[in-house]
Image (cartoon, rainbow, N blue to C red; front, side, top):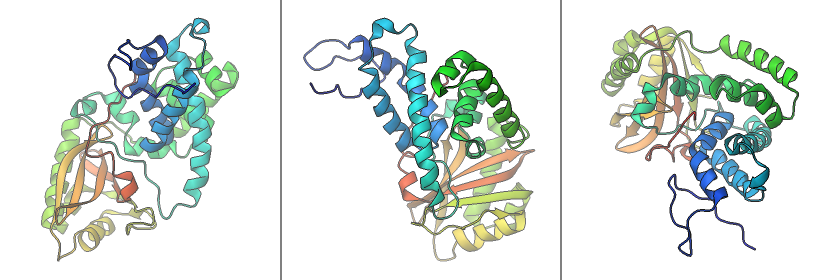
Length: 313
């Protein structure tokens, strides 16, 4: 018997043959955006998150639903286990990656930026902090701190006892809190900093860049060995500004920035002579930019032209 194809829509539509969705399909579709968000926050890769959802679906259709008391929790459990397995594979892949690795940017709806909790959880800044956790620590942190899953459910998902999960959660929370941005700015403050930065970039105004960049700003660029990028993070306002003016903004090209919302935060799609060169996300603290994340790897730019639906529920 052929396995049922994973549903890709978020609404109950008729299946082949004119029937309605069966219970398994309906449950999966109802929670699909949540499962994708869980997998993406675990992996930092939309492509791998989609693969995890396919694996989750193939396991889900073999489950006896009569024995499942909480379908949402059960689906999250499958997704978490598959994500942990894939995260271990990704860790080995990243070790061979050329230059810094950044999460795959996602074009999100503007209203995501208004949901402070969701926007922070998928921000480039926090996603990079999560990269410093072990796979199990990351799963526990994401499920507990982002999705507010109970310790018993997390224990079942990661194969640990509830007391062990509590210890892991405490350790991961302390690790993340020491590295996450000091404050969460409003969407308006982030947009204002982005607009100042965009104008300075398009006009190649060195002083304008220095005015909006914090002294301790760090720029991380990801070319994946396919596109040219700095092989190490660049620190300091002067060095970052000069890298932008002398590297990204070459004199013989027309550089423009289109405002978009990436991972729940204002960002820019930078175009050189009209062609997408990369996506630039930023971190803002005290009205100045403290982090710039420039993704140029073409394999990571496929999700910036159509919106991705993310949810914590």
